[in-house]
Image (cartoon, rainbow, N blue to C red; front, side, top):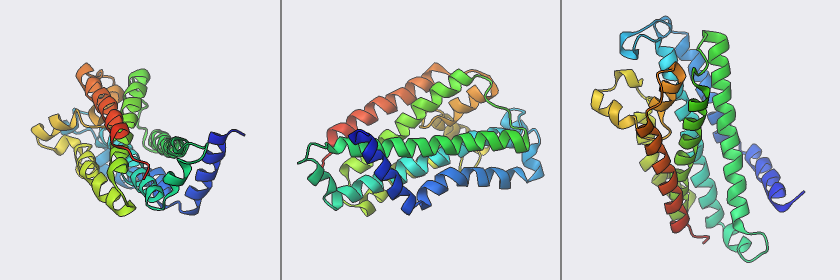
Length: 244
């Protein structure tokens, strides 16, 4: 087993010892799906949702929950904790570069978020007949860009915070707007027009995911905005990052 695999295995075991955040990102979206979907009105076509059922229009917002919890809460706190405890500094003096640790953290958190998303898609389809994406390739591309963009924002918070508490508060600058514009607090069809338009270009791309989902086609400008967040966010996080 190579060094990265060993670190990934160790970090996975550590995550399982304190699994609250991971379990929340994995299960909370599905629990909300089952609870909200049980409301009869959510399973009826609605004019505000373009004639689609509200539950169908709300599933992309559940994806936001899984990504935001891990990318903008768990990752920043975990990385800042390692910096606070001097783990990154000590690793920097060994042949095991601390980038391996960051890579392992990202791999684990992305895997958990994708598992949570897959669970939402599967349950939605099985329980409430929520259709699977009409344009799977566009949906996959949007999801990849959204994942990278959202985790890049989390890494910016991790890059500048000295403590885990500070990382959590810094990440809130992105966490709250992403949850709001993503339609988590209030379904996007009920947001004012100007807020919906802003949310069209905010990671992880709720509207683009919705467009790929129902088959209306993803707007190139939305993908360009996600790509911009992904590239610029990653570059800024790399520039600001300090091991100690």
